[in-house]
Image 1 (cartoon, helix red, strand yellow):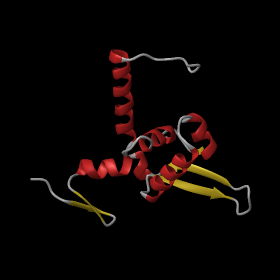
Image 2 (cartoon, one colour; image 1 turned 90 degrees about the vertical axis):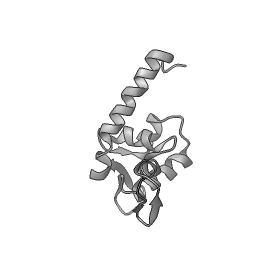
Image 3 (cartoon, one colour; image 1 turned 180 degrees about the vertical axis):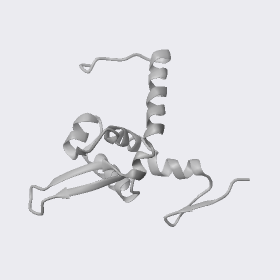
Image 4 (tube, helix red, strand yellow; image 1 turned 90 degrees about the horizontal axis):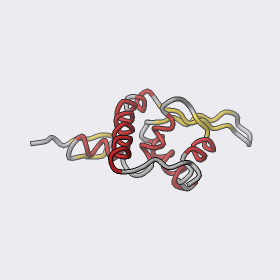
Length: 120
């Protein structure tokens, strides 16, 4: 029998449920993957993840920051301010899982899909 889990005043039936709450959905893991090699500004993330809407990117960044997987660092106090996003130490603990997910994605493409050029 599994144990119930509590994290930040939220309850989970198992650790998979907890993990998926933190990194699940269509975009959170993608954003984390794009931050795994270093900090990025909002516009860099938007350009690299071109199919995400600005609203969705903003919401997901806020949630990842609230869950302490990423940090949001603001430079300057008068507009235009410079805002940088980067993985926290806690967020970096997810990198090995991200690499495995990426490798599995490549396996699926090789066996069942195809790589398309950026033009398509």
